[in-house]
Length: 369
Length: 166
Image (cartoon, rainbow over all chains, first blue to last red; front, side):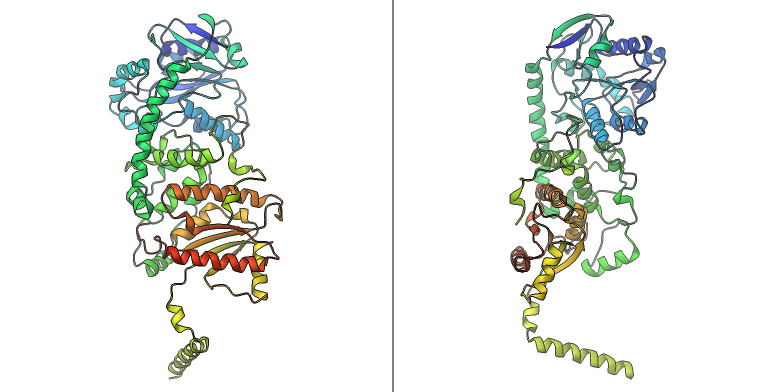
């Protein structure tokens, strides 16, 4: 049985109270969470050290401006952060961070993870004119009932990994009947229990309600299948790929926001991948024409081969694509199929090796011909 | 005038060569282009042995020597494929025989993953082949080259070859 803490406040206020208490009793030096910038729905991740700065924090806001895993890796890149920091992150962001830690791009030390069962987030574009703000009540209603709210990002609609794997504490949001009055926090780790000591609320022994989560998962499963089937029908051979990726303007935005793409010297940005006049010439001779800018399919499939194995399906790439290529669905679909080969779920466990840097002596004999 | 003569001479020589081979007709037959990444320690030596043993295999293979089969980034293969290679062969030492002890185990995993990705996006994964060829297996190299060429011939030209919008 996991220990749990019942706080007689809404989840949003409960987590702020929890964070404030952590800051005030000195268990953490800083808090990393979403904070409101203005009233029209713009939010940003912030590092906060003053408890009163937490007043307009919105840790469970249904928006993901940047994948927090990428941000956390920024200030833990050279080792642990200076003081203990409590980070409120979504499950996919946590998994992304674990993947980065495996690649030595961050450190778990001194970080205290607060996560939740995640109901998904809205597309970034909706945060511009206050649409998210207007939809908030609808969103929490759907989460309360354990339904998939409308207008979510497609990556979130079909996400079946809405449970955090390695969070120290988990807020139970999905299917929480009384989200305005009370919330339950599950203390998954020793650290979690220790940090929750002395908090206001009622301590219980409780398990996460698997039944209700499974029910929710099956709804997401249906949605996921729909999305995958849709993309599967389109991805048939070279013509299909050109149909999908032909729109790409080569901004490499998907690469820049991808939490797994951490290379500073990206192959696709290097002079090696650059098309020189001589390349154009030889291509023209060979094919009788060339798309400008060239190398779209090479870039997309290449990135797929590089990060597909660790794709957490956070959907950040979809958010930034200016021509609405369903990058995240493609990456998630192909990614999951290769992850399955190695029975690997990215970000599940920090001690689990990335499949491509390890091997077993007897395996994949059928690959060799 | 001198240049003109030279050109004529060249042309003549070329014709002569063709005639001597006596297989002008055969040249019109479709011969695929296969890029082969051969590991320095086993497969490249195996290919060498096939040559010095005067074994016959189709002239479709363009070998590239790499220090280890695990040096082959999937991007190399992808680039070759999109660049118009009809087939790509990656060859290394037999499992357990790697010069660097475990390089080919990594290759195997990576290749399995890459093949799956290519399959998943609907491209022809049959155009990719991974083979273990040791330095003493000249015969095996010739066999692999022949077999793979036949297979690619059956598949025909790669769809990426004439595609403009890549």
